[in-house]
Length: 348
Image 1 (cartoon, rainbow, N blue to C red):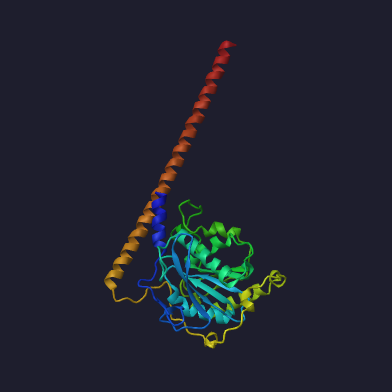
Image 2: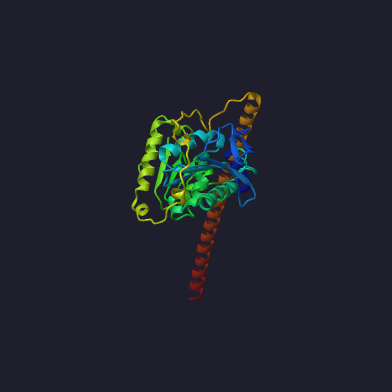
């Protein structure tokens, strides 16, 4: 039953935009891979990355000439690179960081299907790209996980002891805990963040509805980046971790700092107002089909809850049986001791 519950939880966790919000175009003149419908920028690179699980994911790298940190961004469960594109550009400009964003397997133009294990392989491929393609050092990386992206973010963080920092944006405790207020971790649960966060030693910023957390008044799970205090607080946090003593005494610097600055006014474009309400319902002309999908999702959630409830009842029944057996054993033991005493009296 646990395997079925885990599979259903995974299906309920991933909602890749359908159709994807962008297309990949190969420019024969330059040999570059472009993200359509967005214009080419000199400081933005689009690439495909192979993963250890056999899929190929799409990633975009935004370069800032003054950057000393690199943000590795794992987006939410209902977005893709096309919807995140403008936000990635703005974050790079305002935070003065390089930024690598990627689509999970089965999202956008990435191959394969989304799953918990695939997202772990996806973020590993993205981090490997930073190390091998851009010479980025672990101590210069800030991991950023939004919503379901907090899962692969924390999983990778547990294996990188020299990270500069982590940002958790509307993070989840675990897959089951999104739907149930449980106090124990079940083996079939997905994204067990509540257990993994204890293994992280670097500074952590939590953005949600200490480094000082950001609680956004009036904000919802999927629109926090639309509030002005979001950029202000995030910029303050990045500046703080860049000034930290461990950063000042570090002699390792990213080779990004030594590459010639590319001439481009693109990175100094005025900030754009984001109209992307990620993880909220998107406009569609196929309303009957959407209603059908929503009904199916509700049915899946109901089945998941029923399965979980049955498991809890079964566990409690087993507990009761075990207690009954212990009580019987105790009574038998008392009876045996009484017989022993009676025998001793008779023989005496």
